[in-house]
Every structure is written in C-alpha cells, then in structure tokens.
Amino acid sequence: MGIVHEHLDAFPFTEPPMVLERREELLIGEPLPIRARALRDHDPLEVVHFSPEYVDRGRTHPKGLFQSDSLRMEIQTMTGRQGFYHRNADVEEFSYQVTGSRVLISELGTITHTAGDFSRIPTGVAHDNLGDGDIHLLFYSPGPVVERLPATRTAEYLATPFPGWEPAVQNEMITEMRGGQGEGIHVAAADERLLIDRAKRTDARLRLVRCGQTAWLYETPRILIGQVVAESSDGRVFRRHLDADEIQYQAGGTRTLVTQRGTVELVPGDFVRIPRGVAFTGVHSEPSTHLAVATAEAMPQVAEAAKKARAITPAELEALR
Image (tube, rainbow, N blue to C red; front, side, top):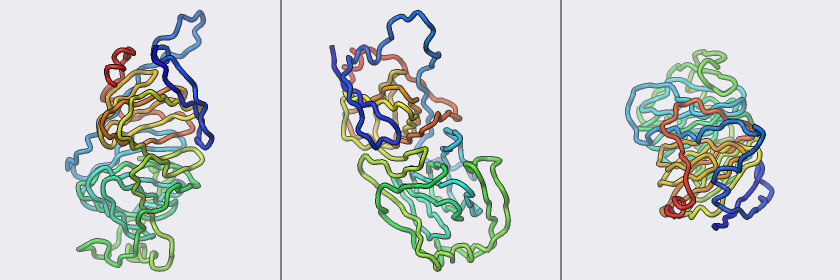
C-alpha cells in the first residue's frame, strides 16, 4: 500500500492547503459501485499541441486555445510586423515568449522579448509587434492586476524602435472583451510617431519578467498566471483545486502528468486543462518547466485535441518512478 499526500487548496491559494494522506491505488483507481447516478460522465483529459518550432506560414491570425467569460488564451506566430496598433478597451494583455524574438512597440516604450520572457500590456495601451521566428502565448483578462514579482527589465523610449523603422500612418484597432475575432470596436488611421512619442511624456513603462523558479507572476480577481520549475518529481504529492481549473503549458523538458482523469506524457508545446476538483501530480527525472494558469471559473477548450490521457495502474506509476 503506497501512501501519498494531497494538498487541497482554494483560489487564489493565499491560505495554506489542507494536507491529506491518501492510499494512492484508491486515489487514482476506480470508485466503489454506487447505487445512484451521482456523477456526470467525464472523458479522459485532452491535450492540445502546437509545435514550439517556428514554421513560417506568412501572416496568420492568432489561434484560440481556451476561452471563458473572463479569460482568453491564444497562440501567435510571426515574422515581420503585426501591421497595426492594437488597443484593448477593457482587458489586460499578458504574453509569454515561447521561441524566437519579438520587439513590442508601445506608448509605454519599446522592449525586446526572448524565449522565457513574460510581459503585461495594461488596458488601453496601444501596441504593435515585430517578430523574428516568433511564437508567443497571449492571455486576455479583466483587471485590476497585481504583479507579484519585480520587473527584470523595463521598456524604454526609442525614437527608432528597430533598425529601418520610418514613422508612418498605421491603422489603430480598438477591441473589447477578450480581443478575439469579431470583437473589434473601431479601426482608424493614426500617426505612429505621435503614438510612440507618448513614452517621452510619461514615466509609466511596460515591465518584462523573467523567472527561473516556481512562482505566480500575475493575479487578477479571476485568474493567476505563473510557472512551475522543478529539477525532478516522484509524484508522491498530489494537488487538487476546490474551485479553480488549471491550464498547463509544457515549456521545457518532459513530464508525466498523473490525474484522476488519466495519465499522459507532456512534451514542449503541449497544453492540458485540469478541471476543478481533480487531483493531479507530475513524475519526471529530468528538469521540467511548465506554465500554470488558474482560473476561478470553468475554462472550455476551443482548440482541437492531439491526444488523450489514459488510465494507469499503481504498478505502472511505480515503474515510472
């Protein structure tokens, strides 16, 4: 009989979790027969995959991943300029750089992203992007926002944001809700010199965060965005959120995700949603890094699945260890 521990917590995870002892074969096994139909039918967890290797497909729209009333997650690839300035009317915009580089040009300065960088664009700030083999994740959510870690770097005013730049008239698009397709409010032409020169008249700056440890980075009333960094894990500590879904993105290394809705190996580029109330842990002998996005409401998947989790026996799990 293998005894493991479960950490039972609740959003936004500011209180210490309740620590429970569990028999592992019961925790991940089938329940005893029940007389009444007390449970909904649940399929195994699904995994969405987008290769972290850049492939030039020309100019494409961002691809939606998960979406609820308070959060939209998408992935974008880009070489060259975005081609217009974007201004969110009512949401904060967060990003994570997967690969390549990206110059973020805004009214609060210009800053270059490389793989592993996080940043936030406050509501109402106009911005454009210049990508070079760029893949980045985007998260849109209403504020207010608490930035839990200090900035690693801040944007600066650059009269010439990148070599060869010449000021021109560009479109400026204002969107509402979560910035998805069909959520535009208005598009009008704007002088981009006047837009970026606003940074000369304000001390406010875009802030970039790079973190090599496990930490929550951003908090809003309904979501938390952070990352988990671990050298190894034997998977003997499970976690369960009472009132939050958690979406994970495997950023580096491989990891076996073990849950009460199946077990699956995650490789870089994999996304998975773990519903509230479902216990989970990870097993890996080499370093692993994944993003974690906790949301205090159900977070439906909108992208097509690439693979599914499967049931695993305690003996198989012990062999993994």
